[in-house]
Length: 579
Ligand code: PEP
Ligand code: MG
Image (cartoon, rainbow, N blue to C red; front, side):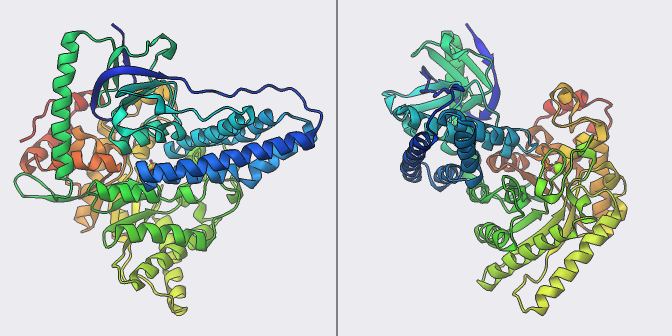
């Protein structure tokens, strides 16, 4: 019987009949038109109709799924009303006599592709939103009805090419056992919504949905990324048991998500905090027991637009996150663009090696104003929250630091900004910690020189791995080489932690490694103070921390550092039992 291996997108096990979902897909051709006025009027009517549909979906999402899901449709309405996109479509209809469906495709698709070329998975996943909106307009032009999953009469595993937010919001939660899609990554909408609904999901499955029969019995393992079509009775029995075990375990973890992360022998307590990229993530982080934010990626404010965000716009966004997090610490990372996150309005040019180029803190030489504005906005936002009686624990962090001169210069700008705001009698937070990411080998090697200059370090293993091993993190052909368990990376992590502690500062880790269960004893044993990860991983990692004793972890860390290969380290860690 066929078993397919995809990417785990939302943990849990499901079994039940398949529902093969094939929504109406509008297509277009390149036929030219004769009367642009009439065609444009039809297009405007279709856009209006799409807007009405989106408002209705937003309302429905608010009632059935929550604010976070409703916000997706608000974002869709923004794409629908985007002046640049509509201007381009209008130009194509009037100047090139393009038919309306083709004009929509040719104005929305390049934008979706630009998003797809970004390094950040979150933004890449937004390409799906842009395509979803274009499809909706084209469907309205065809006069097609809304596709609907209301057709489901009994609980099913939904099998689809991909799911758009509009599809998923029509789910009745109790009719969906699981989601299996051919497309999408772990941060695609199918995955985000599946996680929000607590439904197991596997994405990126190598299957042809036309060959899956409706109602055939399937097993979906969202933790392992396996989709089993037509399982044997034995496989079904195993899945039933696994599902029961998983649900019991997850319920325990989530039920205890608010307990502190103290080791079993009470020798050590660490902070378990969240990586967030927007306001919705902050809300989710709290629900999963985050003790703060260890990495707030601020790029979302700068991408997908053609001008710099104003200080006012930034203040509004930061203030909202600070209000949500209350008195919990929030580590905000200053702008980390460059690499392959292109922001043309900041004067970026095509570079032969963008990951080794004008990225992140390196902009400080040519564009100190960008950092200055961000410091101003962060301080003002935190000050407003403090003035409203909330103790805001703002911590600022610089990305991609490779030289102590960068830290000194950034500090200087920060101090000047603080003093200037103070002179203007603007309310300000009293103490703001100032730290750096350790994600370039030179910073790890010289950690003892950096430590006296800052209040904390946060190790970015995603980039530290890329730069230590000379493996482009976006190149699939060398992805197999990019392991944070490579002993060279582990040594740099250890050096960083030791240098931080020798200088009396705390050190966190905000790369994906912090959310990997097998890394827990290793990082605890190395002495890490703070673990920062995707919100949904927090209950699991906290639970694991509570099962390990410190001396055992120290021994594991010691042994892990003695290997020569990443594979050996992984094998060794997989074989360790909590004690
Ligand atoms: C890292 O490099 O590990 C990190 C957390 O930053 P980003 O993934 O945003 O580059
Ligand atoms: Mg990084």
